[in-house]
Length: 125
Image (tube, rainbow, N blue to C red):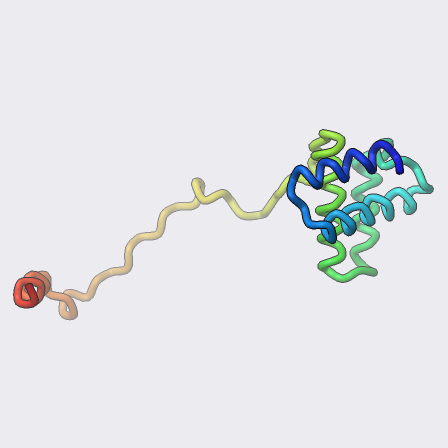
């Protein structure tokens, strides 16, 4: 067992990952390494990892792709301490702070007369 593999297992244990999750994440890193000619994963570039993830898009199920992505993300972020743009969340939507607030729905004055509400509350008390 390599030093990196041992370190990743320790990191996943400290993070509280289940044994099956650890196995899946280790398989993801192993598959990446094999895909890149058995090169150590800590010597791969962000572009190589990105091309690997893009390459498995067409031949794997969505859950498998996500598991590989999360496994590699964990390895690079937690075990190696590398924070690549590949693993940053990006969406096409602005953050909630940027979105304008919605205006309240207009009230129909005939359905809820302001004078009727206090009399109902007073009558039930």
